[in-house]
Amino acid sequence: MKTILPFSTLLLWCAFANAQSIQSLSSTIEHVTVYRKGAQVTRVATAALSAGETTVQFKGLPHQLWENSLSLRASGEVTVLSLSQTTDYLEEEALDSLSKALSEQQLAIRDSIALLKRHTDVYQNERAMMLANQSIGGQEGVQAEELEQMATLFRQRLLDIENQLRQISLRERQLQEKLLRVSKALLELNVKAEAPPTVTVKVKLRAEAALQSQLELQYVVPEAGWGPFYNLRIEDTQRPLSLAYKAKVYQDTEEDWEAVRLTLSTGNPYTSNVKPELNTYFLTFDNYYAKRPQPAPYSSSGQRVVTGTVVDESGEPLIGANVLVKGTSQGTVTDLDGKFSLAVPAGSDALIFSYVGYANKEVQQVPGRGGRIDVQLQASGMLLDEVTVTGSRRSKARQERSVPAQPQTIPLAVDKQYTSTAFEIEIPYTIPADNQPYDVHMVSHQVPADYHYAVVPKLSDQAYLTAAITNWSQYSLLSGDANLFFKGTYQGKTYLDMEAFEDTLSVSVGRDEDIIVKRERVRDKSSTSFLGSNKTVERTWKTTLRNTNDYPVDLIVEDQYPISKEDDIKIVQLEHDGGKLDEATGKVTWSFTLPAGQTAERVLKYAVRYPKKRRLLVD
Image (cartoon, rainbow, N blue to C red; front, side, top):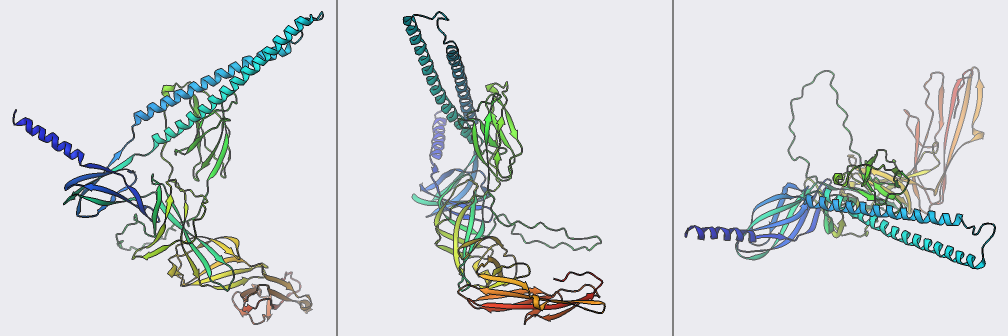
């Protein structure tokens, strides 16, 4: 025994020393690289390491982090021996106990409110009875002294009733506000109970000597990403096109990114890097290619706001009733009037209404653009002990909302790598973990462009501006939506398709009201004649264009000759005023520059001969 005791004591001391060497570090997110899908998070912490081995841990990390992506760098003479992660679950029994206590308090408050309502009914009935029996003494009347005594008694009792009703109303209002607070607390507790577990990452380090080491922990999370969009501004055709390159960044990684440095990468860590292998190509009959679905461009979609009222069987409003989006923990509670307002994500089509002591009700058809839903809940015989908190994690469906733009001048470095491009944004941004897109300004370019106006006067009296951008690949653009502004006026949206292989990117900007276009038939040069069995119709069309801008513009004007599909219909092309003719289609194109304040005319003339016994409309 004398030899065992010291050895046991030594074992206990070693275990204690080992436990003491585990440090829980306080870390912050310093940098995030956001991919088109997913993000790499960099956390930093400072650890005081002693000589030898030390185990440190990072707690409260998102449970969705990709374990294979874990890596750690340590400053100084420190070796990383191992990394491991464990999942931490919330104490469900404590949450259930608190939820039950709040539910009991909710029921008690409702009982008190119901009792006050019954007292109110009693006093109101008494007041009505007194007012209905104001006759005193019958036909014989009463003495003045008796009348005064009865009036005093009547007045005092009515005043007492009014005072009691006022006190009851005040107390009922206080209980209703308390019920609302308890209901909100219960809803928040339900959300917390449904919150996903967190992850603890343990790192075993070895230091040659005691030192302070700066640690960088990196991991990849899937629920994040970004999509490009652009603002294209053109003031006039004498200046370069202004292109603001922006991004909509979203994340639902269970941790907010507070004032972090962002890098937006065109890479995708989830894409396989294994070279595909060709299999033997066997050719058989009845083979065909299935059409592959094309990915939809990045675009924004808003939420639907649903409002309404929740009442009981008698039509009384239910205060603090839960309204949840089915399959999520996103919800609200009704106010003092039983009313609610809830933003429903795109793709969610059902709401669940619940209240303690009442049967849950599910509404499947949520209005497509938002609207009103009024619900009546039915009381149930369910006991409090049977009430359970149910739900699920938040939906990962992406939502978009309008967010005020950040400052326009943003320092940015573009790092072109072998397989992707990274945009390093030096100004810190805050991106909450709410699955909402936030605007991040990346870079602005003044892009040289060749402008021309396309005019099709037969179909429209508008001139449409088109900008041709050459060598567009140098700007590292991605396919995405673009907002168009011309002369300070919003022209709508377009989509920039960067998948094409052409060297020139053409963007249709919009209409220019300062170019006036008019196409009309020249009556004195249009005629109809008969010769033998044939009829000849001549048509002369004149297009007038006026440039009211204070600068010249390049125009491309299109018109057309008719094309005959019958042998009996002969068409003679008489005049197209120097335009370029496409014989196959009959299209005539004029390309010219129209000086500022000048007017130009282009004439198209043709004749159509056909049998006069046939009917033909010639335009």
